[in-house]
Image (tube, rainbow, N blue to C red; front, side, top):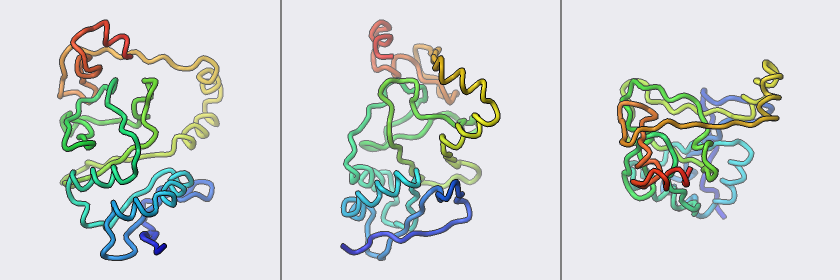
Length: 203
């Protein structure tokens, strides 16, 4: 099987314990489309993802629209996880593609684990930029286990307490969405119901 990807190095990559984060892949051939390459070499990509925790695809010019990006996502064949219980307002663009957050650009979105407060959370996330922002707009990612190690070094008692007692999340949500806030999703759309009792059961 011919290689569909070639490894690329960029200045923003970081090394942790011998691991380069993230992996950066470009097409090995100009005629290679990303959905076809994913389908053909999915096992290689999953192995790379397991080892390097994130993959950035660059240079696949045919992936230019949200619909193109959806084809890439579906090429992996992963089951779709409905966006139920998430606190951010998002708009469906096409099929499995949503806006990241509908809040104004000046609202900061801090590092977080996607939907970690619900029992069924996503194991994998895909990001895509259709139109580059004139200023800002980055989606920075980090390695949680590195953060954990650094926290354990600096705040061992606090980490031990977290590990022993765990966490309880409490979300205060209005009935309706508030697009002026990065966490402004109302409980009706958050849990896909008009019934508050049903919403509480879906927490």
